[in-house]
Length: 154
Image (cartoon, rainbow, N blue to C red):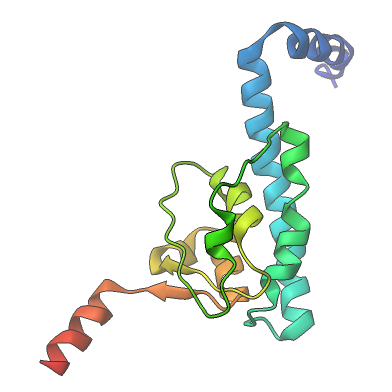
């Protein structure tokens, strides 16, 4: 109860920090991004399971529709160059080396509606990311399994 007296001053301090401190804005946007993506993941996981029993390439359409608006909240704009190279009839592979968690927003701009992702198997244990990987038709890269398969084939 003693802490409640601090709420009004903190609420008044928030707009002041947003206008004057770029460091505060950066950390606030990062916190907002992570928290909002968690909320969206918690919404997407049951929706994907209910829609198609979970593991379906059509789930990417649902996930994209949930995630694509986040860039507007963060003030991000993407310029996609070489888009004409992705407009092919057959299947293709996009290899992405993520530099940050914001890369997901860029990927949502270029990924087709029907696609799957490959991830390392350790990500299954990464909270909502793991649940999300299991909800879609994501292939989990397992180096030991690939090595055993190669030894078996030799």
